[in-house]
Structures are given as C-alpha cells and as structure tokens.
Image (cartoon, rainbow, N blue to C red):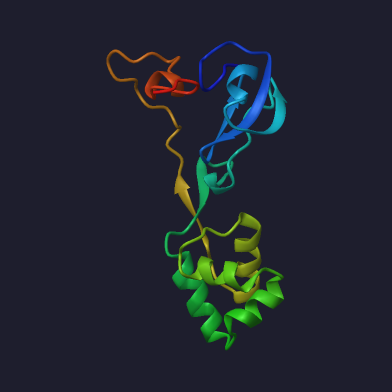
Length: 157
C-alpha cells in the first residue's frame, strides 16, 4: 500500500480527510488533515457511498440523475408534504428538501427507503467499463496526488 499524498510505501496508514477528500496517507502526511481512522493493508479502500453497487453480470447500479424530480413528483402524487415524508422516513425536513432540489445526494439507504415508500425507481444498471484506462505518454502507474498538485504545506511566503 502507498501513501496517496507522497507515494511512500506503507504497511499501515490513516484514512484522512484533507479539504473534503478522503485519502489513505502515511503518518507524516496524516498531520495535514483530519484523521478518520487507522487502516492496514487490505482495508485501505471502502467503496464510496455514491460509487454504486457492483452486480455479478458486469453491471453497476447507480443513482439516476433526475432523482430529485422523481422523488418530488412521487411525493406530490401520494398527497404528502415534505414534512410528512420526512417524518415517515425519520430524516430532517431540510435534508429531504435539499435532496428533492438536487442539492444533496441521498444515501443509498435513504434512496432504497424512498423507492419502497413512494413506489419509484431511483437506481439503474449501467454497463461497467472495467475501470482500466490507458496511461498517457510520459505517465507512470505510480502517480500520486503529490505528483499532480504542488504542495505548499509548511512553507510560509
């Protein structure tokens, strides 16, 4: 396993949030962000919540792009207000309103509960492309975030 900032080989590291991004880092680079938890080899990557679910047929299940419109229309068809639906789902009304407006993406769990309650479809299967992309000329497979972004941590101007 390698540090996603400096590229150093590490046996264990830290899952750290740095400016909104979650990265696995070495001890030195972990000081640059908020440590979420310690990780070891084999436990470094957790599928991101919005990444979808892989199915056995080479397809991936993802949230539809117009989820907000579908939720709002189904709620209105059911004759419910945002407040009513939020109470049934046990989520804050403001959160649900922002999901309907497309400002926030619902968690997979909330989307599944909305599907069941409103009898709508919020997930679709798409062909999985294998996730392999050719490297451009001059690129190396060991590219890290630190190679791409000029880090200025600890330097005063």
